[in-house]
Length: 196
Image (cartoon, rainbow, N blue to C red; front, side, top):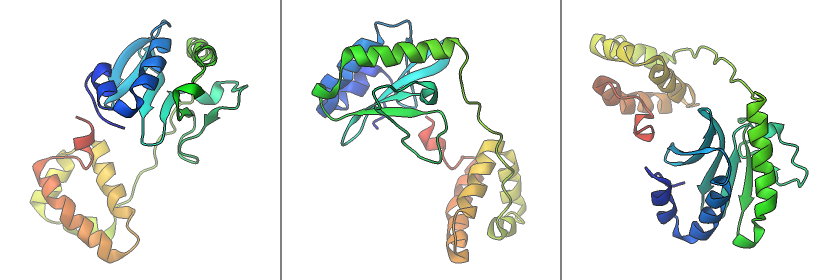
């Protein structure tokens, strides 16, 4: 997906899917949903809650239902884009204009709106505490690095811990600690560049 600050900019950055994006957008704009841009893409909300999003990829345009798990999906069009990771999110993929049935899309969107009004949502589970990898714990014996790490937000600390833990080999963990040390000293989170 491309990142944009407006929906129009998002569409311009996806010329191969411009027609499909404009059609999906026009359908969504006929509803009571509010159009916003979050994470660089179009999101449609109700009372501050994400209901639907649209996104352009190489092989398809996707319509994202943030609590899509509650949709009846009578047409059998929804997929879990990240099986095992996402619990509520469901996606509807289109590979051409001819696959977009405005009446059916409207039906799904209206059902999603009604589900949101009814308060149907999967609440995120609290995350388990992530342990320090030996390599990161050893590096944090350096006072300057430890103080910089402690000054980071809890989320940023968690991302760094998970990043190091995810490496299977000790050599890789050591290389990752070396890579993140300057970022920690600058007070930058591992994924901060994706949040701006």
